[in-house]
Image (tube, rainbow, N blue to C red):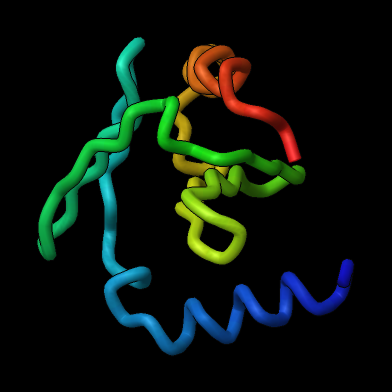
Length: 94
């Protein structure tokens, strides 16, 4: 499982072209918002099932197989990343 998930994620990323375009994320007390050239959306924190992180990214799960990826390198500062992480406290960690 430890080796299968990263390989599967790379394969899905290569297949799905809209994941390769820039996306802007923002968050507040109510939820996470995103916008790209393809559209925009907002997800309340309560709609996320679980989340995971490693040294490079956050995965926010809508279901066991559907998730949003948010690279840690996208944060402008450590303070911004800490602000985001505080909102994850209400979501069950996987």
